[in-house]
Amino acid sequence: GQQLNQSPQSMFIQEGEDVSMNCTSSSIFNTWLWYKQDPGEGPVLLIALYKAGELTSNGRLTAQFGITRKDSFLNISASIPSDVGIYFCAGQPTQNSGYALNFGKGTSLLVTP
Amino acid sequence: DAGVIQSPRHEVTEMGQEVTLRCKPISGHNSLFWYRQTMMRGLELLIYFNNNVPIDDSGMPEDRFSAKMPNASFSTLKIQPSEPRDSAVYFCASTRRGANVLTFGAGSRLTVL
Picture 1 (cartoon, rainbow over the protein chains, first blue to last red):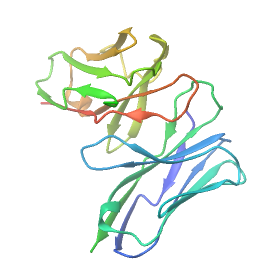
Picture 2 (cartoon, rainbow over the protein chains, first blue to last red):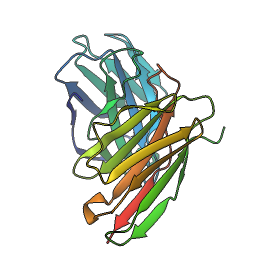
Picture 3 (cartoon, rainbow over the protein chains, first blue to last red):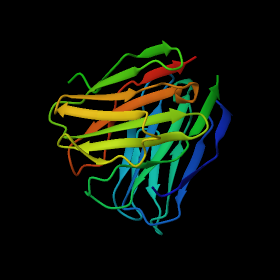
Picture 4 (cartoon, rainbow over the protein chains, first blue to last red):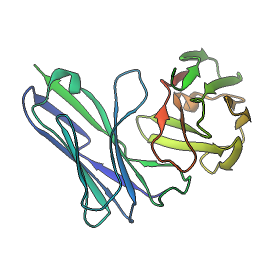
């Protein structure tokens, strides 16, 4: 599948700080998804994006589908300790095709009180 | 809804032994995916099924790996013989065909000594 480059690889921040991470693709995607994985668990969907330029929020989380359709961003505002985990971007090159998602390698987030 | 159910959650085995991982997808979901997660390679798609039929198994590492889906509510991933480099967390995920939001199980952590 297409390669997704996710950055940064890890972040170590203080509680209350804002967080930004992004994901880029070498080709155009029609869908971008952001997942969070807690330790010892499977990834859980945070936000789904289906249209270029789309900006979607879920509580303190905001994600954007890049205009070029080759990138996406996730922002977390006012981080709290329970935000700790690994955040994955995932993309699908063709809408409703049944093809599986391609995942980035994840951004590991640590939040200190 | 019990979600995607995987078993066992943890398995420790010796090199050369056969390993069978099991998955029960969410009722009504007719696409099922097996992923492998390692620190080095992140989440890798191994194989996926639509309506119990394998669609793409190009991610299966080698002939030692096999997957079956005998019915809509059960799938297995088998490794025979297992090797230490197979140590990883194996995730099963499901979705409705054509949808792209995967629901993951909690994973099966495999350690091959």
